[in-house]
Image (cartoon, rainbow, N blue to C red; front, side, top):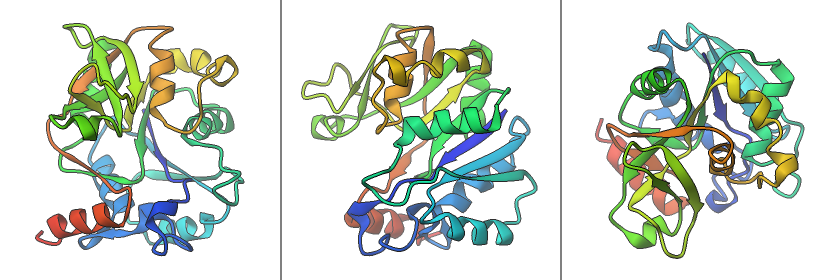
Length: 245
């Protein structure tokens, strides 16, 4: 299995911190967001390669990061060729860009490069392999205002996805969906048709939601917490937590 970390956004809500610097390389505590993700992936025998997709503007920062990374895994850096927030591809197109560019032929773990977690993705991978299906993560979110700002899961009792709702005004459940996915290689041909069939490219959850209309997709209930870094306030809150390490 390969792991793809999405790191091609421009993080305009974090300006001025990210005006000339990529969000995944911001430090949370003593380590960058990206290093925290890679540290976990390094421990997982299921992961063969780590792929990081960036944009052209921030690509040199990731090249520098790679030269200093002590990861024992093979790291592949991709440049999606975009130069600013106006011509960005969006997360869904970056996933498809990666599959096509590398002609991927193994299952794929996809992680947003702007989230920090306190659990291992090994549990999620093993869940997906046991289902032999593409899978998403979910966690219980009691706050309706919070649910209105994220993806929300509608599922059957076995947590088979019925529908994913992006920032719904009336959330159908209290299961929030963070941007972590496993896509099985058997679904790649279906994924490649997503954009032409109207899958909106910005939010990565749109791809999983679209795929769930074509084949079985299951949801794994996260065993820990995730910390989304979307703006300056959230970055400060997350730093306050991890500075205690």
